[in-house]
Image (cartoon, rainbow, N blue to C red):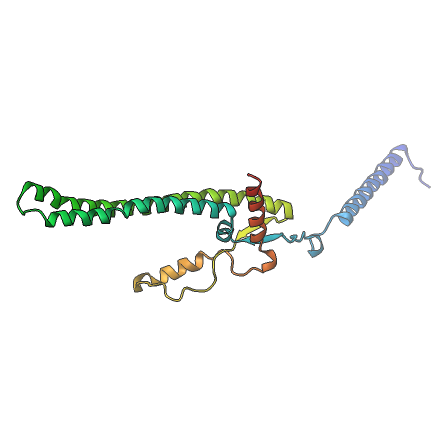
Length: 223
């Protein structure tokens, strides 16, 4: 019987030690694989619903007490200017009567003859200028109130827990007669369709009245 030498014993120990290390590594790898999350449907994060509402900004502005008060002020100013302009026809009529009593060809006749035409042109110019002023004032007021409305929409959204507010004021009914030329009809209809921001929304998510009440309360309080 052959005895084991120290060299043989050392070799066997190294071999057995190597097998133990391999076994430990294998066990560790299998353990990591066991607890590694698998990419299946159960681990996919589902999107949570977003609280979305609609608001008709045109209706908001039209329903504001501030809008009504300022609109009345603009109309009063326009009526005052209009009354001044409407005095011109009477002045023109008086000049025409004076002209009828003057002799043709005289210096007095020539001077008066130009006055009715000048005042008539002046009246037309004043009327057009008045219309332009009204349009500019109304546009400036509407722009300012739109800014206030946008701020109030955000305040109402934060107060009531809405995350997204969409302008939903466009009517969905197709205009019955758009008066389009044949060469522009298709493009105009496509542009009209593209301008629709909301196709459908329930009245339950319409916060228009809430925004109007919120802004009217602020206006009444001097805000």
